[in-house]
Amino acid sequence: MNIRIRRAGLTIAAIGAVGVLLAGCASADPLEEGGETTPAGEGDSSSLVIGSQAYYSNEIIAELYAQALEADGYTIDRQLQIGQREVYMPEIEAGSIDLFPEYTGPLLQYWTEEPAERTSDEVFDALVEAAPEGLTILDQAPATDQDSYVVTREFAEANDLTTVADLANVEEPLTMGANSEAETRPNGPQGLAEVYGIEAGFTPIEDGGGPLTIQALQDGDIQLAIVYTADPTIAQNDLVVLEDTEGLFLASNVVPVASDRVDEEAQATVNEVSAALTADALIDLNRQSVEEQSPAADIAQAWLEEQGFLG
Amino acid sequence: MNLFLEAVQWLLDPANWAGPNALGLRILEHIGFSAVVVLVAAAIGIPAGTLIGHTGRGRGAIIAITGGARALPTLGLLTIFGLWLGIGLEAPFLALLVLALPPVLAGAYAGVESVDRATVGAARAIGLTERQILMGVELPLAAPVIIGGLRSAALQVISTATLAAYISDTGLGRPIFSGLKTQQYDMMLGGSILVALLALLVELCFQLVQSAAARRAEPHRTQTPASERITA
Image (cartoon, rainbow over all chains, first blue to last red; front, side, top):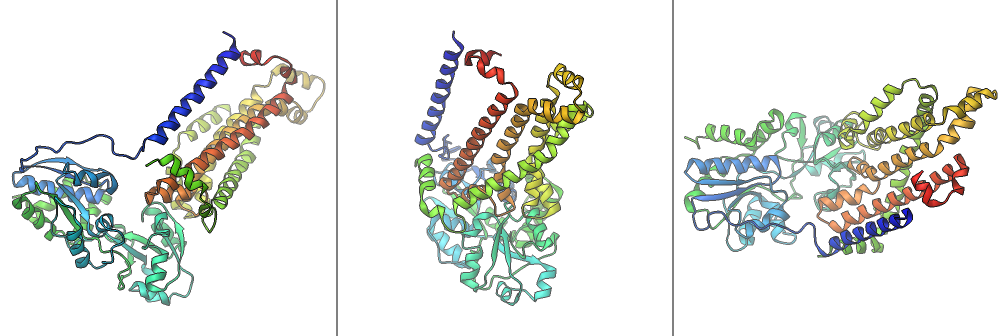
């Protein structure tokens, strides 16, 4: 065959292939949930499916529920590390997952547009109201995992800072470092200006309050960072969490979401676990995962034994 | 939901071309930052590669270094450099330089080395100095391959420079990261489409420059029919 013709043929084939790909992009949403999962053991309430987010701390909490229930004789199917809320929540609402550790504020935001509630109890009550048919919100734990503004100890002492409002005393210009979404969300500079009347610049650092953010704080490239309250790096690096007196941040307590298949006995067990899960306990569980790299199941087991759930 | 069309809509929305996050500004940042990286890579890589190709010394080392450096993950490097240098453009600059150097070095070295030794010998025989041989014979003949190295480096840098937004307020990585984190997938895909278009544009420019250099390096080739050129 003439080389030029063969080449033209290849080009046409390539263009065709690209066209088919683009058509595929245009007609199907790649983010749509593909496979269907069937509810495990429908009707049999001694066998439960427990899920977790793809977040190490959430996975540990899911393991706490799982092992406490296993000690009570339940059979647990673990579907851990299922990514983000947009992915797993439809599965929970459809009844494919029976128990899932959640966070009150973000979950309320998922179910209702721009909730007005801010404090822990208000948010919890609103969440119970907002939960769709067939889902039960169990007791919330004292432990929270929510956004907070942190500064270095040195900066806090130099400017006499204990609350977010105290940032008004700082004379030098403030720069906040956080994931890029904070730039437009109410937890970022816009919220700080609206709620506290304090102006701050913004630098995106895409590691979610990780080592690069902490480094930038210590270098003085940023003065203010958004870090989760349950993050062990706060204590490790001797950072100071500024108290949010005006309710800028949505309260976010750990809370289990349960399907109808979680019977009263199981609910009672999970509620006991939640009651024991204090803020310090959660930070310590997270610390073991981050510092000692222990697997979630081992960390959960040690804690449950210590608390007397497995005996 | 038709994501692809939504991304195109997002790109065409005039609101996204204004304000502090204006796309025009992001595109300029992206091109500017990438250009600086490629220029610095060229300033280091072309002289070093040429010297190695000309003298034949350090060949083993250069092959080992360029091969090894290509395997380094840029995001990992960025984090290491970020912890060392802090946030800003310095860390992404270094990480991208590590990405850009191997193809530039390899192009310069391979281009100069592949020049016909008989041609170099002839140039030496008619009394050209080493410097004249390098500048007047080897470099023009190696130009298509050297530009090929630059082309490959530029393409990789343009498409990876989105990582600059990981720790600085720069470039087309901003809409990609923001869109990903806020589930605004039209924004994320829109940003990605712009990066892809930029990469294609740069590729096209380099292609033109490269074929111009090839015509200059081997003028007799342009006389032959296209079909034979492919098989040659």
